[in-house]
Length: 301
Length: 226
Image (cartoon, rainbow over all chains, first blue to last red; front, top):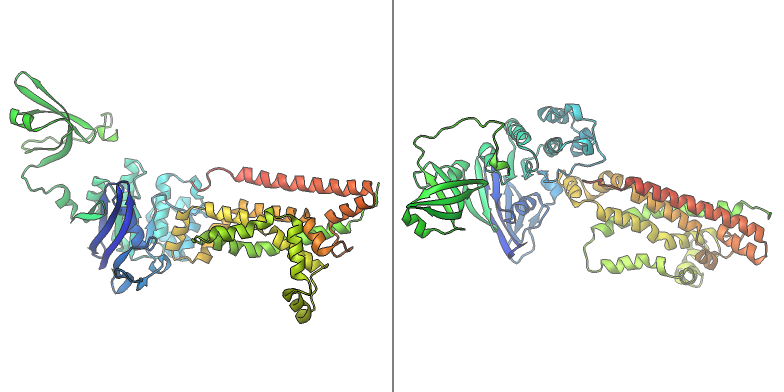
């Protein structure tokens, strides 16, 4: 069990705010930290790794205390990043440019068996003697992941590891990450914005908003099971309201998709362009078909 | 054609080689300390270490002479305790050169270290590596152009020094008469042809040194850490 009760004042776009978390992480799970940019996700990861100092709080990993500071006192415990030995995968990969793939792994730990095993798991065998400059983004990410796992950390922290990759590469690395997690049993904390990634990988989501935890539940609870009975529900924004004879039409942006919806007079009275709305419908007879590669995918806009 | 004596050049190069070596050993940890140090006092310390760049060599030479003289506490202690006399000796101009050329070694190293991406340092720390291990295995191999610049500029600057050596060492043949001092002597003796020859050698040497520095830095430029 990993207990993260931490507090830190942060500077944001709208002035200072307090990052405050109180979260227990089960061992062996994958937990997502989600939230808009500037909500303190990366700082939370850095505080756990010992790269940023919290103002107060307590970080307990099983029987070990990594950080403990009461308000107004000096820190009683503050382990250095070296002593914590978490696996950390940075957003920019942070591979050592003068070392080959193999040397990057062996610098983390001299364990050749482990290096070979991780290279095989991440499909890096062909690239063992290549320098990072000559790798693609997806390959760099694999090396960063393998390197972070070399010391067999209890805790693996991933800071938006897949955000710079294309969909196909993302999907492949997600599968690899799941396989690795199953095989090594490491506890994973991943910062991500991507709802499909959260749904696919994680058994829990901690949603941060301006430093506060506003939701802490399973992805299913967060995305699918809503209070109402409707099966489809999308958040959108009204772009235009217009009337043709007795029919009222709202043009609504849902993500990058634009839809026209027929609304009744009462709805029209209560809505105005710019309003954030939820469009829901009971899905009595939905059709589901495979996305054709020659169709235009609006989500790529 | 004047008489060519190779000794001043050998002395210059010996002085420069030993100075460069000593300064490199001292400056790597010193620059690393400064690069990692977060304090309002940092500019004061940086200014202090950079003073030799702007001070007239005679000012520095004068203070060093006072400092090394056997009438000063340090000079007296060295003479009585170890029988070492720094004034007008090779050891003396070696110490003076080290003080004089220190910023030329520290500055390139420091700027290389400060420009080194912090995320790579954090990556090493998260892998359990100490700051020292990170310095030798991650930072230094990636700032080779800075190291080379420091080494070469320090060497060349020491070969080119004049005022400090003259103040502290005078012009004793085989002991403190380095190439630049020899040129001064030749001019005083109105031996212009030898002065020409010596001067030309130093010009050619300086040109070559700078050519190497710019060549190396030009090649190393570009997004190394991207």
